[in-house]
Image (tube, rainbow, N blue to C red; front, side, top):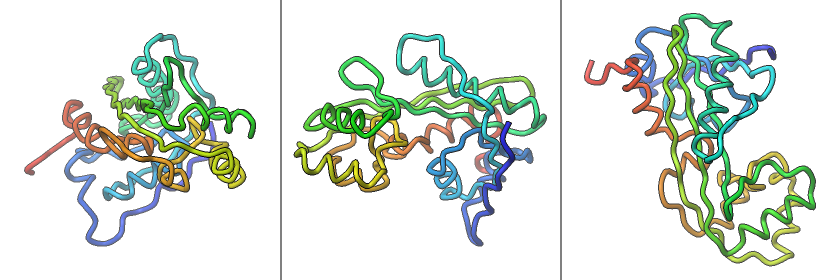
Length: 213
């Protein structure tokens, strides 16, 4: 397991995430994604980052099952070392033309993925898993994304930035990839990797929320 990294404290006047959702327990993010960490900070969460030692192998066929299985595996791999904490695992998958698009292996594959997404709709799935005290609570979210038509020059220029090379589907909606997205149906934050409204509902279902307290 990698060395824990600080998640960062929220600024003064931030939303009282811990009081409303954590019921006094610490929060651990079982993910190396800086985008997920940034979104948690956006809503006022204080947390620790513990990166799972290795990625679990999913045993599922449908995309929502795959992301939930991966999120569950990540959360479980960290939960044993953080008893009593809420451990959050998450995994995001781009689904296009009946198949998953993971992170491109090289620049050539990144170009091919962007060419496939050009001028078309694709789906983005994120699975969530909260583990605490031996109990696991899972959920998933799907968003539909449409790309504008891209020229070969635009694709090459984008790949040259390096941004697509560590992103599922070879793009980041929070970065330069925003220039190619014409429309999003569903949760925008899901496309970034952490559907915040779904996460809030998951805390409520898991018994951590104290809304109205």
